[in-house]
Length: 250
Image 1 (tube, rainbow, N blue to C red):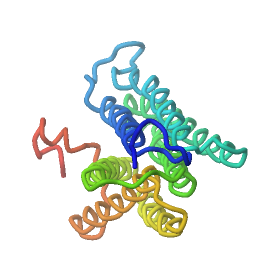
Image 2: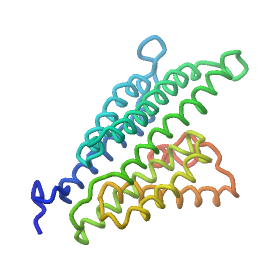
Image 3: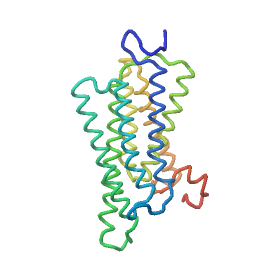
Image 4: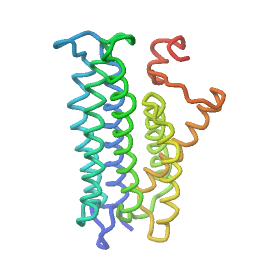
C-alpha cells in the first residue's frame, strides 16, 4: 500500500497528514510562545511587542485550522462548514477580547476602577471563549476527519509525540488562562469521542487531537497533585523556566 500523494479510495495518506499536522503544531507553538518571549518594551501607544505579534499570529493560526480542516475533509458538507465556522468565530472573538483586555490591564493598578472589567474580560471571558473554540475544533476533527491509511511504527511514534506536545501546550494554556474547569473534562470527552468513532476506521487527525486531550488530562492531574489538589495560575511556560530560573515558577 502506497503512501503517495493520493489514494484511489479517497483516504488521506499518512505522510501528507503527518506533514500537515506538524505544520499546524509549529504554527500553534508560535502563536503560544512568541507573545510571551518577545521584549516587553512599549512600541506603539503603549502596545508591547508581544501584543503587536498576537494579532497577525491569530490570522496564521486561523489559516492553519482551515487548511488542516480542508486536508482532513472537515468542510465537505454544510453541517460541518457551519460547525467549523462557529468554532472559529468563538476562537477569533475570544482571542480579540483577551488581546485587548490583556494589553490594557498591563497598565492598570489592581486598585483602579478599570482593573476589574479588564481582568474579567481577559482572564475569564476572553480565555474561556478562545479555549472553547479550540476545543470545539478539536472535537470536530476527532468526530469527522476522513479516514487515513495505516500507520507504520515510526509514523505512529511521531504522531504520538506531536500529539503529546500539543497536549502540553493546551495544558499551559489552561493553567495560565484559568480554564482548567473547561479543559480538564474536555480532554476526557476528546478521548471518548475517538473511542466512539473506532468502528469507522482510523484517522490521523482524530488520533492527534484525541491523544492531545489525553495528555492534557494527565498533565493537569499531575499539576493539580503537585499543588495539593489546586490549579494555581502561573504566567510562565517551560521555556521561561529554562531561561530565567525557577524563581519565576512558584
